[in-house]
Image 1 (cartoon, rainbow, N blue to C red):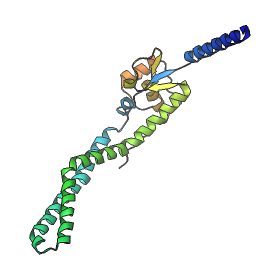
Image 2: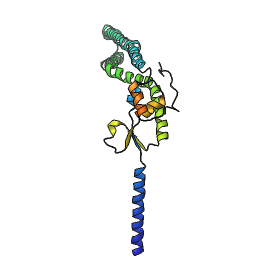
Image 3: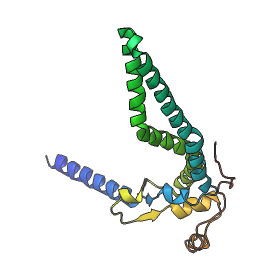
Image 4: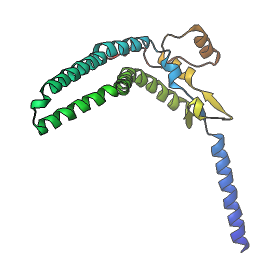
Length: 199
């Protein structure tokens, strides 16, 4: 019985010691890609392209939908007395569908704008993600959280400056100074590229 108790205590102590050793080796980082995205060269073009998309595509679609609704509505009003019941029913359903689309146009427009924005921003996110993965691998982080998802971590590091250094993009002087002050190496990063904007 004593052997079993001694063995149990020894096993418990070894588990506690392994847990304490693992806890000492955990490295936690904090990173917000939106902060990096705002500093990307050419990011201002995304707003211009989104406005152009709304003007050249979505507004044209809306205007066409309105004119088609008016055209079909006037045809229905003029010819409904001569239509048989099945044709009248088809026309009413078509008008109701088009009217519903026009009533919900703002929701449709918002959805289309979000999709377009994601399409335009994806090349930027890809560049940020590549630099982030490099920093993660080099610095051997176990966990990385967004600033709003982590309330407290005793030993955590902000990764934004490391990622910016890897990307080698033009930065405001105060950020360059912060990178230098932390002793973050700017060698071996990704090659800066021109603004990756898709149309």
